[in-house]
Length: 329
Image 1: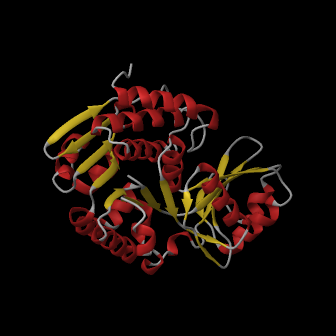
Image 2 (image 1 turned 120 degrees about the vertical axis):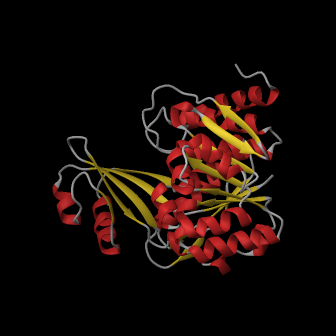
């Protein structure tokens, strides 16, 4: 199974500040997590030209597609970036990980999530979406879709109702499975009507955490997975340190979490989805696939940021082999 992802293409940029005066110039309150304007983004870029920064390709779906490729699976990614150095960096990072790039390029700056670290260690976040959420349905071509067996749609794109509805419809017509990650309980609450329409009609695999599942169904996780399973082929609800629940065609399973005390839970859901979809792509059972997802999540919560360190992948691949062989410890 070849998996195509579609999501917000955002570059994660980490900048260390010499002084909090920079935040004042940009117009961001220290410690805030704000959406920022194009004008503020230009001020940030000007500042970053003369300071130490760290960049990484970001966005939930990109994290998932990169992890699938690094496991050895076949994945591609559709996103929208600007015609600038960040857009070029994003594409190069996808290709380096082994992800087929179908980036749509447009004028202006690429979207970015910038984290500023003050001298006292406090973090301030400014997100500029740029062109990322402006993908139109006609930019998702049938020629690209025909190369894949499954499309995984990032929940944050639900705000683009026409894109989500038309892409799901097109994918199903071409015989692809449709996977959806609910992304955020605020998104679920705001777009519940659309989700109630498209999930039972088009979605085959649904990912949600406990709060998202409850927001959609009005039920606690254990009951929510039973309700969701009636609408899709496979419903997965992650429970943090309590593991995950799977519901499929009247059968239910629990899979334990892996990893120790979390350093940072960013990217745990993205990597769980990657492990599960990779497992399904190589013919693993539902439980084995979720075990691969839990194992990946266990690695990513042990570090700061949403991506597993490069030096861990060979170890991870050995563990995947053990899971698939049924010899997991």
